[in-house]
Image 1 (tube, one colour):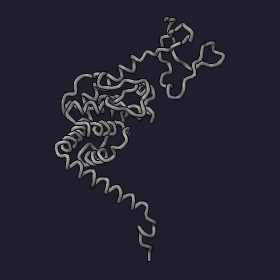
Image 2 (image 1 turned 60 degrees about the vertical axis):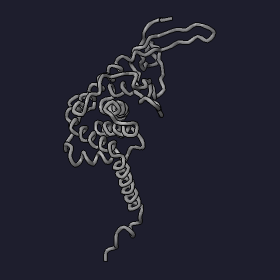
Image 3 (image 1 turned 180 degrees about the vertical axis):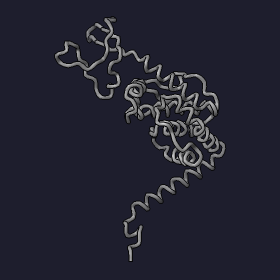
Length: 247
């Protein structure tokens, strides 16, 4: 039974308002309008049904900006919710369809340019980038790395684990051939997508080359990890072994 609408808010003890204390992972729902439902029976329930339309609108906007940024590469089409797993909170693990969390959209909208907002945007851009990469022709082996690279370029945050090699190799291309300065703007600002579009095209060239020549991708990964191990070994050596004493 529908009994009304209320906003989730933090209220003082003497305000006369009903206070709902949310766990930390749900703090992004503060001020969201909710439908208040009552279910009778042997175990009555009071249900808060949040209106997430503002978060969904944000996802549509972000996809349209990604579409604009990748337009020089190809057409990724309209946003299709069926290509993703839509969830309230970002899941720890996922399979088959990349997740888009409404909580991430709300954090990105309401927390400015904070670290929390950049993390949320990075997850959204990475998962959208996976679907976009697949639509443009990347296979399952490289589409996640492409999404992670796009997110890193746009937010400075690397949201997906296990893709350090592809991200690092592509970053070298940005440093050698991409723009030297990037405007200080959120990934929700379409101007930054237009600015970064040439770098996204460079990244795409690298990923399509890896896909067409798998042996070059395997060789690049081996070389990258070999260099990383050498760097780690060098950093772990005692000072007496890495530098000759002055005489």
